[in-house]
Image 1: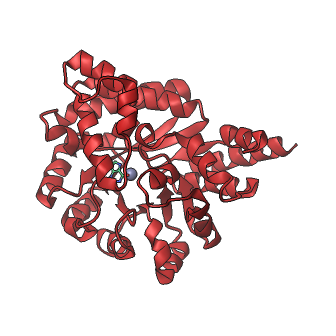
Image 2: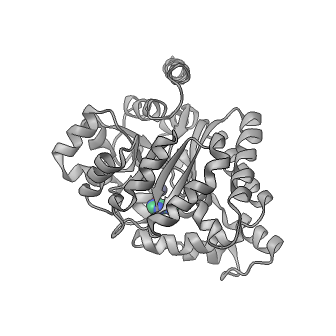
Amino acid sequence: MSNQLKKFIAGLPKAELHLHLEGSLEPKLMFELAKRNQIKIPYKSIAEVKEAYQFTQLQDFLDIYYMGMNVLQTEQDFYDLTEAYLRKVAAENTQHVEVFFDPQGHTERGVKFETAIHGIHNALTEVGKELGVTFKLIMCFLRHLDEASAIKTLNEAEPFKHLLCGVGLDSSELGHPPSKFINVFKMAKQQGYKLVAHAGEEGPADYIIEALDLLKIDRLDHGNRAMENPALVSRLANSKMALTVCPLSNLKLCGVTDMANHPIKKMLEAGLVATVNSDDPSYFGGYMNANFESIAEPLNLSIADLTLLAKNSFTGSFLEQTEIDQYLNKIDQYVANFNA
Ligand code: HPA
Ligand code: ZN
């Protein structure tokens, strides 16, 4: 890729809207935390960890992802994880983040809800302030577990509601359609949470329709397979539904085999509010800039395309309109200066 394009991407103000904090756990920190907490992990070296990150589908990744998060035990561990992520993205001029965490991934193994949320939220507040990165926090329900467990988690979150912006739905998609979680999403909406869900990553377009009609989501995570259903594409475009697309994740999990065929360009052409995100950057090979770079050349994206993707990341965010407008102005200024 040209240095010019690389430089443009690096300096572009952007927001990340699809990031699992547990998926930002770098092998080096994994080893440090394993040692600190005397947790056994099945790897001898960082090289061995990286070698294990070969996936042919979502479940291959999830098995390793849940194993990796075992090293997170104390509030300080969650703080360190979140701080490391913020320092990475701030260095890439990512100025706003809306991040996920998986409470059940921790409570199921005996770590308290409050331990995870306090560590994460304190880092977002303190380190975010230092770096000038604003944030929203979203807790995801694990869809391979039952709805009763999700409802239990929603109830556990009640004392911490002021720290949370929204709820989401992640983990193994196939066989776990959005319809399994109608009640808990209805309860969450009544409590004022924003609603998002992973749909159409591996699952069919029908799962996206369920997420819209039954869960009443405010934003769609992934959504790639919407492209198989033209009526659905029109619906998403007309309703200005933001899609949090994750290029390197799609490549690593074999949703696409060649970035030249990645659907994000067609999404933009169809008028979808598509955004670029890293999903689980430690596992999928890169943070925000790497994800932008991974599609820029194979899809022949122009400066205007990249600018639109960055703007979409703010218009698709859960920030207030006045805040969004400020960020959009920053992007306009950046582009004007870059072209001058
Ligand atoms: N898909 C579904 N669940 C997840 C992912 C993902 O990419 N990352 C972490 N949990
Ligand atoms: Zn995800």
